[in-house]
Image (tube, rainbow, N blue to C red; front, side):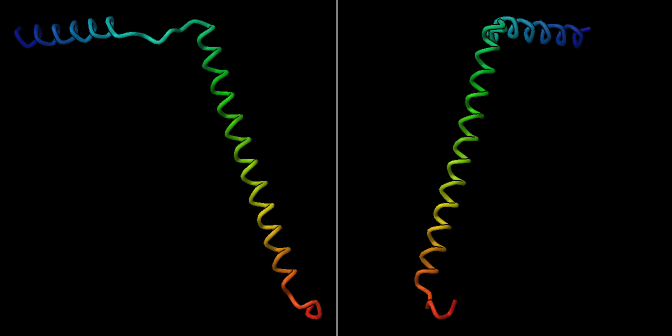
Length: 76
């Protein structure tokens, strides 16, 4: 019987702690703001990746042009 009492008190303590814990707001407005923040972060990430890709392409193109400029024109 003592063991059952112990488990019940632990369960009650856990429920009490869960009730006291601050909960995340679940309003529609809060969910909408969170969704918009996630969308904005995703869009910024995609744009940053695209910028990096364009910069890399530009650098590679410049490198190829500089290498071609250094070659002997007769070798072409």
